[in-house]
Structures are given as structure tokens and as C-alpha cells.
Length: 464
Ligand code: F0G
Image (cartoon, protein in one colour):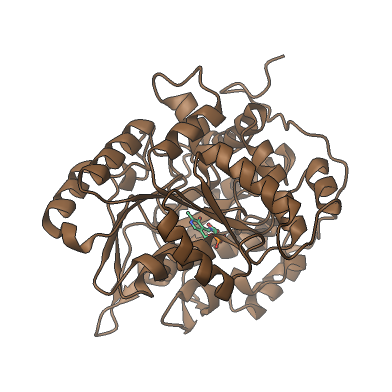
């Protein structure tokens, strides 16, 4: 029987469940009270107040029996831990890079690297920087510039590789401001742009431009396995490659890798910085000892190194990746059929809904994304994340809103955690809210924090 074929109505999970965690069920009445107490900010809910938690796919994976058994056997030595050596070997095999530095999570790799190679006034172009990446660049007095393609910024246009970088724009920037650009960056998959993949062709073009201008290429490889499988499925010439072969080819195109083990290492914590340049590694190791820990543990317990190592061995499995990408696609197909304004085609780790199209009667200054996260929570106990006007919008000097291009709400799917029934329940809740959308109202700020507003700001409903 062919599991997971495209278009198949059944989601076939390629695992059996050996250990279970109770879901905390609640009623809409309870949730209405809890979200009011949380100031309508889902970040302030406790996990026990949530039924299905789609806030992030980061650090939320279910680990396998193999990961747990490796964790129990782990070596907790400060220096020379066997688990570091095993992780180093696996990461070298996947990336082809000689130097592997462990860090406690992705942003620690970003901080370590950028605080070493960037200076004030520098520019780092990317297909799209993730928010911590951008914050770490700006922390050095440098500037991050996103160069997505036109398709990549059109939420309802179908294109196989909407995560790509606009190569012409990169060339122009290198021509005009080359002396201020110490490195070029690519994020795979492109989280900010909807979990959309980058093609090998685009990676090759960016890599060759970077080399032509003598700039190192950094890959933010948080979701490298998902991106590799997208290439296998969507790009001509790769259908007979294994995801591991594709990943190896991707990494051959770059010089440095920043990596969060909380995504495609199927782990709850951990990260890596992988490099080829020995001189740079020497500088980084000194700083690593000061900020993260000795270079054979980098802020992680031996058992976390073990979980990451085993997770990296599991994540490139084709059966797993097929199920993983099919899950998002399965949800998108159902939402699209119900005319819900969902970003297409399906990305790798999350569904993204355009909230200002979902609630066209709610002005953007009244945060349609907060209306949607609130409705999802009250109706279904589902926690999603606003990534629109609240998260990415700003104010001008007169206090007027500057709106980001899209008003997205992201529902990120933890790896191997939820079943088809759970995902079907989420789809049904979204469809129900959509069919009653006219009765929903917007919000205004109660307390507004100026930076990273989505984490801590609170809101008040506007009563019609
Ligand atoms: N790069 C990308 C593309 C990410 O998505 C993340 C984290 C990071 C870097 C930072 O990694 O969390 O281990 O420090 N993304 C999470 C998310 C938080 O919800 O998308 P980290």
C-alpha cells in the first residue's frame, strides 16, 4: 500500500506511539476567561490552558525511543564527551564541513558568529532573515536586508520555490555596496516567507555570485531536511537523489552553517555552528568558552548532544520527510478547498493564514491576526502565533502604524507530536470560524511594548 501519496486523503504517520501525554481539554467558556486574563496574548497562556499547541515547531518535537535510549547512555564529561565526538562525526557527514561547534540553540550560533565577523555599518543580505538572526545582526550595528523574489511575496501565487533569493537584486547590492557586505546568507526553508523552500538552482546561483565577489555564504539550516525533500519532490533532476545526498550538495555550496537543533535535529534543545575556515574557528572557540562552554559541549548536556546526534540520523529518512511535508500539504488542501486565505503552496513546517483577507471587515490597525489567534483559542483551544501587524509592524514618528506587507497567523506543527485527527480538528475549527467570520471584531493595544511587540503586549477587544 502506498502511504502518503500526494492527494491521499489519509495522513499515514510512520511511527507507533509508545508513550503518551495527556491533552488538557477545556471548554470555550473556560478559555474565554483565560484569554481575557492573558490580555488576549497567547504567549501569556500556560501550556495547560492550551489543547493543541501550534505556537512553534521549535524544540517541541516528540523524540524517538532511539533518542531516549541514547540519552540514558550519554557521557556527561566536561571535556571530550563521547557524545560530542559522535555528533561531530554525524554533522561532518551531513555538511561536509570540518569544524563543528556546539551551541545551546540556533541564536547562540548567530550571536557567536556575527559578533565575531560583523562591524558597524555592515550589510548582510538574505532571502529572508529570521527575527533572531536580524536582531543579532542589528546588535552588531549592522543591517540585515531581505531580498525575496516577487513570487515569494505573493501569498496566493503558486510557485515551487517561493523561498528563493532575487539573484539580480543580490548582484546589484554586491556591485553597489560590496565593500560593506562581509557575507551573504540563505535561510532554508524560508521561515519568514512562509516555510517555503529554496531551489538548488537558486542556491547555486547565490553561491556562485558570493564566490565571484569573494564573500562567504552562510546557510541558516534550521529546516535543511525539509528543504532537501522539497528539492527532491519539486526540482527537476533530483527525484532519484536521497535527501541526504541533496543536503550534502546544498552544504557544498556554502562556507558556514548556523543550525538550530530544535527543528531538524528532532531535539528539544541544541544548535551547531559548522565551518571550513580554521582561523575563524580559532577565534570562535575562545568566545565559545566564554559564552557557551567548552567546545565539546557548548552549553548542552551530554544527553542533549546524544539526542541531537540521533535526531540528525532520523530526520533525513524519506518515510519521515514524506509524512512531514504531506501533513502541511493535507491541511492546506482542505483549507484551500474551503476558500480560506491560506498561503500556497504548502510550506514545510507550518500553515500561514492571511488574517486581513480572512477578516476583510477588520481594519489592519485593529489587528485581524489577534482576532484570529483569539478565535482559534476560544473555539478550539488552538494556540497559533500572530506574525503580522503586531509582530512586524512599526510606528512612524507621529505614532501612525507602518504595516508589514502581510498580516499572517502561523500555525506551526511540532514534529511527530500530533495525529491526523488533531490536524483535522484544527482544519475544522478554522473552517467554522471562517464561516462565521462576519461576527468577529478587532482589537486595540492595552499595553504596547515598542520592541518585539508580539511577545508581551496586551490587547482590548473593540466592542461593535
Ligand atoms: N533561524 C530560523 C530560520 C528560525 O526559524 C529560528 C527559530 C532560528 C534561526 C533561531 O533558532 O530558536 O534555536 O535560537 N525559530 C523558532 C520559530 C523560534 O518559532 O520559528 P533558536
